[in-house]
Length: 203
Length: 94
Ligand SMILES: [Zn+2]
Image (cartoon, rainbow over all chains, first blue to last red; front, side, top):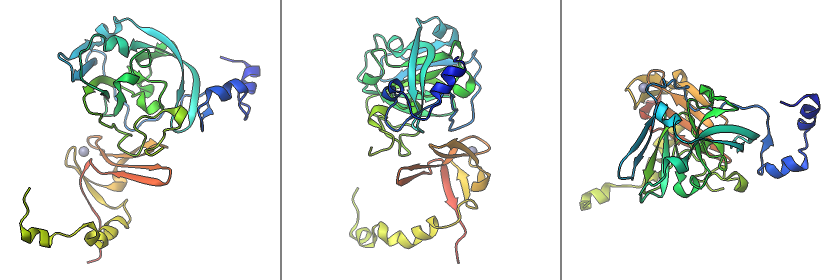
């Protein structure tokens, strides 16, 4: 954590050149981690937690918590951008890449729908979550992911607005036709690229 | 589906319900009564639990957490989703 000097420097109203370059249009930088939830925080015990890949694949895949922890993990440092206009730089996550979870899957699916405890859903094109661009993360800043931030595990898709990084994620449904999720059916953009400022339908 | 001549004669478009719709949508909604599609419980809108934030208002059933009413403002539009409600009733002039 920075001392007085860097704190004063970073809180200046006008972002420095590097910050400006990393901030998508319309965003401001925060050092907090605001909590945005569309429902009560679910409490799922790790003994009943599982993660599954279902839908358009020959055999569903399923991991218990222990099996999931035994998968190869990656630690990544990413900037994240919320549609409510805050961005946070250099967030550190550990998780399992979707490349690992979907490795070798034979599917005609074009999209996936992430499903979560509490009923939340979000949709993503398969082509956008492979190639090292999406993870199921279970630590933040070196500690187990707190429930209010989506623990025990959340999706992490940092190149899209953060509502696509579904909290409390429990699985992925592979679908042959795109199926808009919770916010995507309430006026929010289906794709959600912060660099193109795709906040709302029609943007 | 085949429609009889009679049915086509009797059928009008949505404009013909404009008066009723205006009456239904231009009322105080916090006192409206909704039936939750998740559990069938009846509740006054004001008694639903509000979640959500700047992205929109998510009003959930206090009994089963179903999102009964969802409203979001996106720029210059308002979006309303009532999939979580079986029905919604308001007081009307007789
Ligand atoms: Zn209910």
